[in-house]
Length: 306
Image 1 (cartoon, one colour):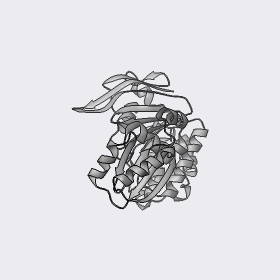
Image 2 (cartoon, rainbow, N blue to C red):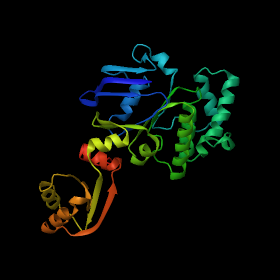
Image 3 (cartoon, rainbow, N blue to C red):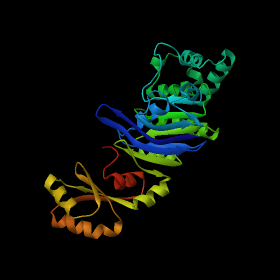
Image 4 (cartoon, rainbow, N blue to C red):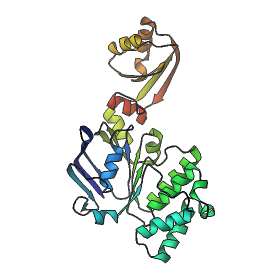
């Protein structure tokens, strides 16, 4: 359904996207995981025809985005990071406005609006002004506006930023329903738990480059990491952490008084011994099974929140 081959994009001296390639199958939810500034939004903007790539090719359903952008626009819906709604219009009026931009016939548009409002759980609030909505409700209307024309492909760029857990779960349910109906979805986020729940395959992007891609099991095997050890200390000095890093071969990240180590539990006795030798007083110690956080740490040498 989507082919991205050797694509790059720069802004002056900044290399936002650096020679990335990936393929997305029809009916798949594909996760683009990376920290802020990694290149996720630039990639989505190129796929949605907002930006042109400097090099490489992008195709949607066999159509070249550069040579046939209008044809591609008919196939896609875009949920941007920012809320793109008119605050002084009702939800229904907003959807009427956006639907008319797609040239959807009036009768069909009204039917689509009513069914989509039902899907997102806001049919009872359709006459209320957007400015009376919570952040999570606005996000759901943002999604509704993107699927009025029933696109084959939906791009979702950080669609749950700044909303409460209940609204986030509702959005997840909407995404899963759309996918069951056959929609192909690209989902960008810097939240590990979101791609772990939603995505069949994941591409990890950092500093404009795709570090790795595959299923979670494939990424786990690639990173060769089974567990992550987190150690909280009473206090940590810069010299203490630096001395620790110099004496181990594992990836180590410090946040405040805690260090995260991509290492097997079998290495724990040696790690504790080293902490004692360096007079690093342990306050608490926890283990995590190999999730995407551990994989990201192992592959990039840093935590996703960086």
